[in-house]
Length: 105
Image (cartoon, one colour):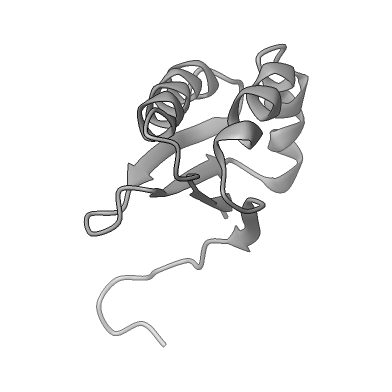
């Protein structure tokens, strides 16, 4: 079962913040995707609201996120991102449901 974290971020009103946040998220994805036991690390921008972003972090299991947290880059993320946000990050933890072939349930 894949362990997933979704993080919703909302950028502040400073004109340069959207581009700075977008660049930091893309940079982070390139680094975090290489972490051990990371299935994927996806960043998205809302199609209607350019200030709204979502991160989807997918790990082999819940314990796998320890490799993410041990990555030296992790310590640079919040100091760079938090000043660009309008509100606190909304972080949610999930376990992906197993989807069987046709006729499941």
